Image (tube, rainbow, N blue to C red):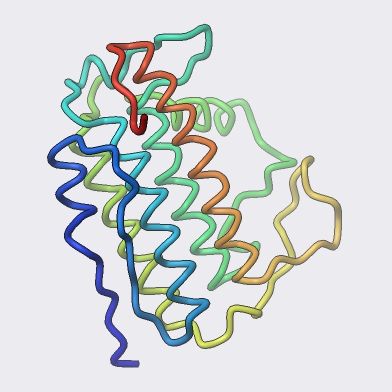
Length: 198
């Protein structure tokens, strides 16, 4: 399409400097709606990444509340989630597992998705997250119709026969990333008092 995403330098500087200011994320897309969705994705990703600023691998693995959640595990999970839902936009339910038939091994793999394992590093999961984010942005840039839809995969939490458009799927990625950015902010504040904003 020849359309190029442009991201303001404030996002990179804010992460590097630990600056919790709301970033001036901007994007150009084939339509204003595309641009707004990409910009919001970039903003909420920024706040999730910001919770990891300055942490060691050990700190990124550390639980600080009664929850099992850790900052490294949350970033790892959000990476997997965004990758899966981006694939759903292109391929539909065939790109995702049948959640209603998970085995014990599947459940263990899912639990491990929320943990930074001993052989994993924070830098590694952040690098993977950046790659997935770029892929999603490029996918949206090349998607002329945000209304294209697919039936949802089989899962106990989805009503049968429901379909989601690409637009609805992107909104879900934003919502889940925002939820987990909030979790990560609580974990970080409990760890050393640092907050993303405020």
